[in-house]
Image 1 (spheres, rainbow, N blue to C red):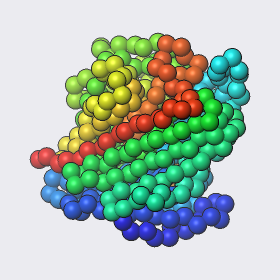
Image 2 (image 1 turned 180 degrees about the vertical axis):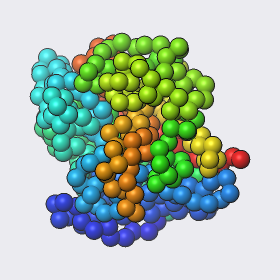
Image 3 (image 1 turned 30 degrees about the vertical axis):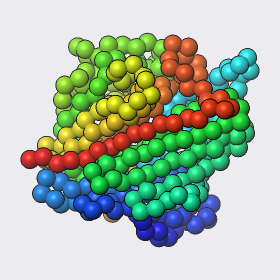
Image 4 (image 1 turned 60 degrees about the horizontal axis):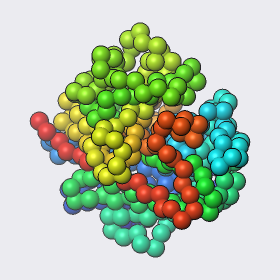
Length: 350
């Protein structure tokens, strides 16, 4: 593992960049600000490497939170309605950053934190830790969280999370990387073939909060049970797609959540031959298709990211679970250990 300086964040704090490389030339770079994935170079069918994650060239640009490019988001990934929830008879009020709602933990969530390197980091494995104090963004309890990034000899990016709390608190973390398997600067990703191992998804209201319904995907634009280009139905006249400007929905993975690692998704880029398989222990995966990009956001190398320049597959607990009794439990309590694993496996075929 190579450690280099990566400038400073907007608070003037020094930022460290960590680079992991495997025997096949695949490489991963992560910075300690936000535990953020900066780059991921993956070989295509001819062995040529390309950076397949969107991002910026400087740490300070990430600090401005323009698009959540690649950080760990929490203390609660996705949205909590109205920035409020009731737990064990007490109502908590969170800081809001998405209109009236709390998104990805609030205005100063885990993506804004300066994580510290753990002593067990080694070649091919980076350990980062963060302490979220009691009352952070309005959440109860002091939480200690650890994330481990590992780049394996099988061309897998393995991400493991653990967390502990001093008081009951909603908890769900994920990585918010945007992928484009043709390369971060290759235009839109709408011809990527997506398969999701999900028979249902969570419809949302006008502010993108789940309604509480679990809707079947069959016969809808949300049916990715068989490989289908992302762009096939993304612009069709469906109320859910109109609300989000594309896909910004949680899919309920099958089989029912057991805490074991199972396949969530498979993506294939027919141009480069790169494929990505996503495994997770989480019950849901959020498909987001970069709907807010308009060509005005400058990315790595001066690239302008247009609409649908990348997609996210964010493995997580269901959004707004603290306010949705029909959703899987997302409360971490003292004495418990939160554990979550997600694997992004890469290959290439002609």
